[in-house]
Image (cartoon, rainbow, N blue to C red; front, side, top):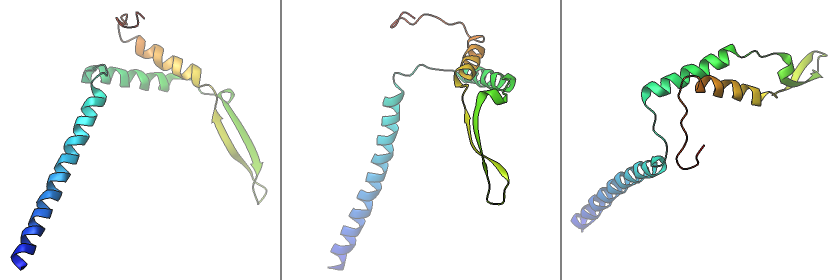
Length: 114
């Protein structure tokens, strides 16, 4: 009887390990499927994009006009900033995109002709 129990426990343990391996394989294949239609980037291209974004953000002139903000009085009569919202996202995105475009030759996409 105990041999039968040990055999069942070993079988269950083996099956659990197999399930764990199959789950890892499934996640790997799902990632491959997700990536199949993504355009490819080399490490050098990614470094160029990273540097371009960093440069665009570093050179972007942020001032108070780019934000909506609200003040309120604290319980001890101190004026505090209660809400700060960045409102100039379009110009910031445009600066980043233009900086990236300056580093690459943009070609027309065969599918969309853009």
